[in-house]
Amino acid sequence: MNNEIGRYQQLWKKYVPVIKILLKKSLAEEQRLALSKREFEVAANKIKYNYQFTMEIEKGKVQNDIRDSAVAIDLMQLLNENGDVQRWLIDKNVKMNMSKGFELILNASVLEPVAVVADPE
Image 1 (cartoon, rainbow, N blue to C red):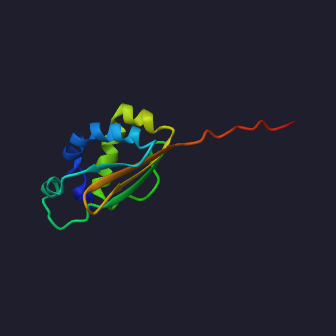
Image 2: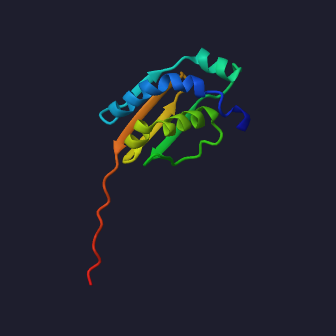
Image 3: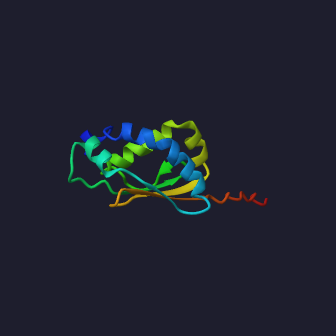
């Protein structure tokens, strides 16, 4: 799988501006982005490949194991390189799913601030 990492970056670069907008909209309701199956097949140089993934991001950090998905790793790397997205993610919980039908599904919520209680003396 490691030799696959980096193959999808050019493809994701084209989608990052749209994903950025959809992330913000996903606070209000689930957002879906139809992707091109053919573009992924060309990027991977493979037709039979599992492009599906689920990525859970909290405070800008991936919470689940995406090591087996070069598609997810490449997307997260580009999101981390985008300062606007990085700043936006800092207080959010985001779930991204890439479906079998090549649809990226985005759900986001704002994390509740943690109240700091002073220790009574």
